[in-house]
Amino acid sequence: MPARLQALAAGAVVLSVVAAALTGLDGRGVPPVEARWAASATSTAAPSHTFRQLTSDAQLRTGTAEAVSVAGGSARLVPSSSRPAGTTTYAGRTWSWGRWTSPVSTPARAFDELVPSWSAETPANTFVRVLARVTSTTGRTSGWKVMGNWSHRDTTFRRTSAGAQRDAVASVATDTLRAAPGTTLRSYQLRVTLFRAAGSTATPALRSVQAVASRAGATQPTSRPLLGARTLAVPAYSQMTHRGEYPQYGGGGQAWCSPTSLSMLLGYYGRLPAPGSYAWVAAGDTDRFVDHVARTVYDHGYRGAGNWAFNTAYAANRTGDAFVTRLSSLRDAERFVAAGVPLAASISFSRGGLAGAPIGATAGHLVVIAGFTRTGDVVVNDPAASTNAGVRRTYDRGQFERAWQSGSRGTVYVVHDADHPLPAGF
Image (cartoon, rainbow, N blue to C red; front, side, top):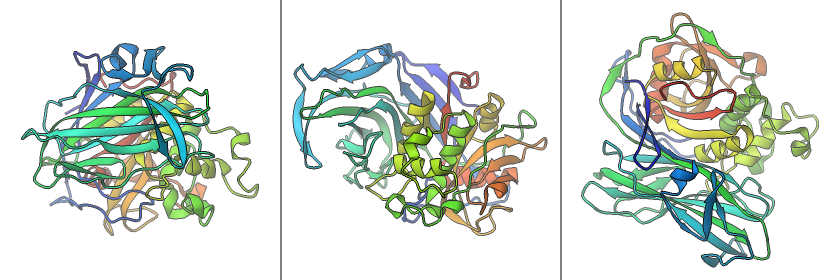
């Protein structure tokens, strides 16, 4: 079924799509939670997903604001001269804070995973904390789970996820909230707390917050091609040319597929970071901006650069809009490519599962979907290639779809700018 965007009564947006099961991520150093390999060579798993985004003033005003004002397309912490909602000590510093809490969202179908993402402005001496809580179909509500303490900068604050936070209803796996075993979820809420260091006058702002809720379903045949051949001019960067660089940010090589894929998306839009921002990178390093992106998305909690929401939060500050969602099949991805929007896709596969790949198997890897051939095979920029020249690959449609759907339930980074609007009907 094609993905659809439709207005909610609250003014939010819902994207209903279909996709399969989450494994570990780039650089996490954790095994996949579950491997769901298709029973035959022509099938993929197909769950249902619902995406909801709050970004306009009208949408943000459906939430509850405490020491936060909504105007101009963002929810901002009140000026430092005003009274905050409270103060707290975190990371050895004192912070004043305000917070915004969404209304309860109840997807059309029950779900078992929730992946939030966000876009925020975080000047020096500020950060945002994104939280989620869920209610089961039996009426039990989880505690608030921290999905990230995030800032664009890392000079005075280290962005971090917050661990499992397990209770009887749900737990957290880095960037994904998961239902407890035997539990099905009915609804969720999101909360964003905006922090300012004591003595600072800086004002953090929330521009958008969104989440995709999903549940695994039955297997489906490999999708049939929809739109024909098209390939986007996405630049090619290899993560492997950075092997051993900056171990404090993951060390390059196999740990940097996510920031390298993200760099390719930013390069496509002409929105790579300015040279002055990566002057700290050794002059002899290849594609020095990749090192900078890795540093800027690095999660000091799980010690990796593959936190999905951290990657899109950074990208949103570069292009204007970016988020994590899940798509049903390559037919949905074809619509994005036809609109001029490449996608970073999270895949996993066992040995022999993706012919022509530069790695034999992976529990979690990010690549860029750059186009499709006339017969529907997938044109991919795979950063695991040993050099930039080897990054562009063409993968069998069925094999790639299984690796994507059965690996991450069709998870993608959607990154675009005003000149590349999302495809009609999404």
